[in-house]
Structures are given as structure tokens and as C-alpha cells.
Image (cartoon, rainbow, N blue to C red; front, side, top):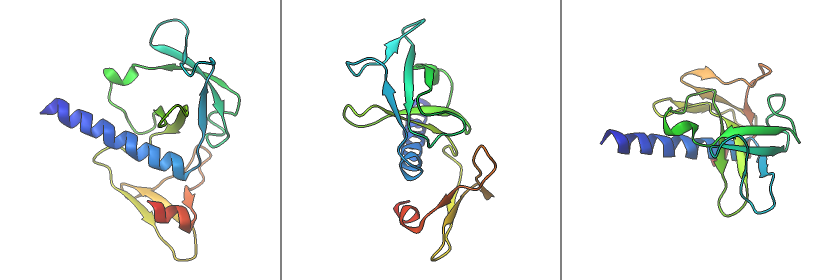
Length: 144
């Protein structure tokens, strides 16, 4: 029962991160090798990727190479603040995003008609790495 709850929690976190990733722009992570598989480096669990896009600035830059421990969450739960990869459906690469909420957290939007909505987690307005608020245009807020 505990394992099924953990799996459900992981699925919910990944789904939430995927939605937020889409809403805040689709930053792609492109595998470095041509066959669509991540390139192994020091071990089978480490893969190297090149960031494509700028939605993670200034944390990650377009063209930056990153190394990812692909099995990190087999033994450690995902936490708010973690940087994660989400495999896109098909062979469309990965999204890289920062986890802003986990199961048990409350997610809300401070909707203001005709204006951008601010993302709120557990009653606190979210800010990005530069201290600016996460704001969503009406059309993106409506998707959530």
C-alpha cells in the first residue's frame, strides 16, 4: 500500500511539473547522441544532455551541457526546488523544470480578470530565481 501511494505521488508530481512546464514554456532537453538515447558518461545512470531554450534562465542557459543522474529518484523522493527531467510523449526529448509543489501542497492562482494571475503554493506567492513573481496570462491560467 505504501509503495502504491509513493508511485501515485510521483505520478502526480510529474504530471504537475509537466503542466507547469508547458504553461511556463516548453524548454526542451535534447539528447546529445543521434539515436534519441541519452549518452552515457561515467556510469550507466548518468546521461549528458544539451539544454535547448531559455525558459530556465538564469539557472540553465540555452546550449549548456548538463549531466543527469537518471536513477536519482529511485531512492530519494522528489522535493520542491529539485530540477527534474520529464520525458515527453513519443520521441520528443525531455523538458527540464524546477519542482515548485509536491503532493500535499496546495496550488492556487490569484486570478484577476483581464490581468495576469500569480501562482501561489501553500498560501505563498511563487517567485523565480531572480525573485520576480510567476505570472500567467489569462489564456495559460485558464488551462490550469
